Length: 123
Image 1 (tube, rainbow, N blue to C red):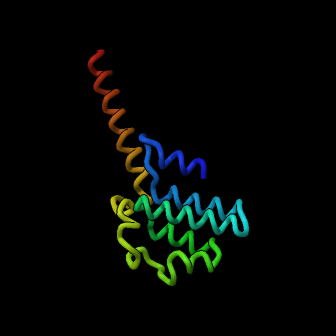
Image 2 (tube, helix red, strand yellow; image 1 turned 30 degrees about the horizontal axis):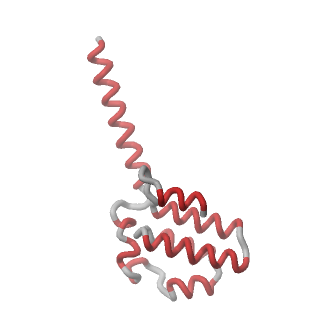
Image 3 (cartoon, helix red, strand yellow; image 1 turned 90 degrees about the horizontal axis):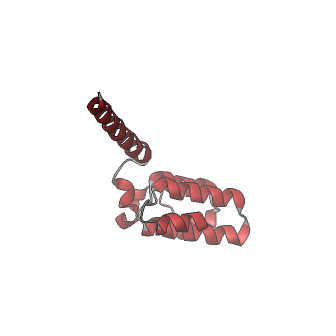
């Protein structure tokens, strides 16, 4: 939870749906019992607060979390569209599987263009 808290508190980066998907996976692999249930509930709450609930996060929760935890958090819902829209506002801005790579590639292209411009000026 320490890393997740730092990401949420940062002014430089913001959590994405895959941030929460990874946090859920990590908890399920590293924790057991009541501690696991407490952490999963808290991660899910933070995810919804940040509007980062996506179908992938929901699928991760359903496949790895204990059934009683899933039932308490989302009931029988299997799609994000059936849950409150505020839970998934940020997740809908850009496709979750392309968000990180698109931003990175865009910035990388921008930097290459700046380098080409500077190289041309020096000639």
